[in-house]
Length: 169
Ligand code: GDP
Ligand code: MG
Image (cartoon, rainbow, N blue to C red):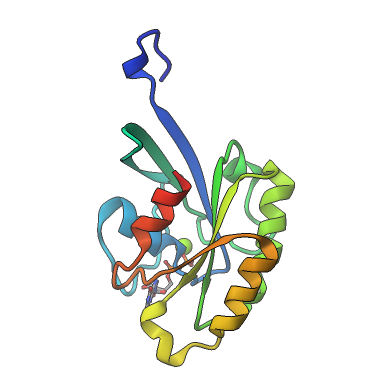
């Protein structure tokens, strides 16, 4: 909301969270905005986004985290989803090679819609590291190649999730 009085001016950031189905996107948004994790969380929230307000450099920032309604095939996501996005989480699961291989396409898809915006690579399900199929080296390689900051998260264990969004904010 814009106001003449500076203290009422707030920064709101639309963040889109993309990646293959089952990477943990909806769980990540729920975790960050509602503080919950459920194992058989199926249906995506039913609203367009969830939000959370945080303080960054003494400034209030409202993050609006947009979830997909589980329509992750590349062309099923509508333009409305991307419209006005200022930041993006590219998420994959370390237990799903396809989700890792799709990251470059997801990045391109977002950039085709909204151009260059702040992005991070999120390597999720680190609690399942023992059964990982994506190696640490290939993830590091990809991040370097795409020039993305990389966060290793476990939404389940609430590990590093806050850091992802704080960094973007
Ligand atoms: P989405 O399709 O990308 O939105 O993925 P979901 O958030 O629906 O998650 C898919 C499945 O992975 C669900 O069963 C989640 O509970 C599970 N999941 C999400 N994040 C993690 C995590 O960090 N660790 C583990 N072990 N499971 C997770
Ligand atoms: Mg989902």
